[in-house]
Length: 240
Length: 261
Image (cartoon, rainbow over all chains, first blue to last red; front, side):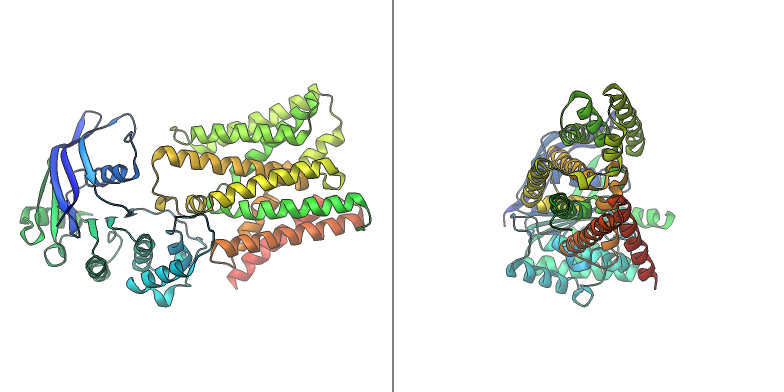
């Protein structure tokens, strides 16, 4: 199995505050990896650095932000589902049209047969086929999250990065989303990086974990997720 | 009515302007740049006044001023300033410049009224050619950058581009917007820019759920208001822009009312 992500001696700092200090890890391809850690431990900084590497951004962040080290990401098509999407209450597009926004390549403004079937397939895979013509603004929190994921899926990614997609969902909907992304990851044979505060499902549904704490990254098989990582998050979630 | 050359010119200009405004307006409303479009139209006013002052065609002055403003606003996008505050400062400065240039150029009041409220019935054949050329430029840019512009307007979070490319795309969008504002000012004047650039697109949002259909309906609303407005202006000998504004506002209010039913 070849390697999808290699990070060597990576350091990230905001001004004088070091978030990640000299961290190194590897992730093999076709893996479902969960990134856990308290707020401010550098989870989003880490995935943004990976994304910047893929989109070819040479100068990271603003002046205060310093990054060192090497990052290699073996991905021809990366899709990212951000944590926040400010679309407004009167967002006019239907779920189908919103998903179509993900089709970014080529000049042609209309959809061809292949693209239409890619949208239909993505709709089915996230269980939104019956709601394709519903306005996204009228959809529930869980349906919106699934639409965001479907928009990422039509890009046919080999690496899918999700930043706390279940943050706004109740436990049942969160678990349903985890199961469907796990099924997709296995059927499409893609890599998934999933930032999560909720660790209750990690051992059962993920392949591996990266635990960010005290400037360090500890990685391993999901089944071996340390209790320390899990329990801290429960506390944090309880306090919210 | 159509045997008169000025009415033929007005209808051709009105049609071209409505198509540009309907298409670009869909992006402007999606990106919530309504007030920025109004500021650009005030800058267009200053540009036209500058044109009169130094003896250039007012449309040329408008294009130069609005594009310069679009580039400056694009440059300020990443600065730590509140955009609405910058917009108010720029608007105030633009109107002040406009008044100054009108006074310095001893421009006739009728010319000033033409810039502020539109003067499509007086549009010349040459103006028409310039207008068509600018509209063609807008269409080409939108066709070439349709997908990234669509994503920028409807889901910026999904736009995975490096910071540099994103800034360029935003500037490109602002330039397209600036051109559309300058084009639309010819019909409804810089004070009534909302009438064509934002109201038809805002009304369309109550009926349609895809980007293509939003654009089509927005163009239809703009065309309906423009054509009806031109006919009514011809029959009554009253200002065209007043009728177009009235019709577009009615369509918008009706759309809100129907959506609540």
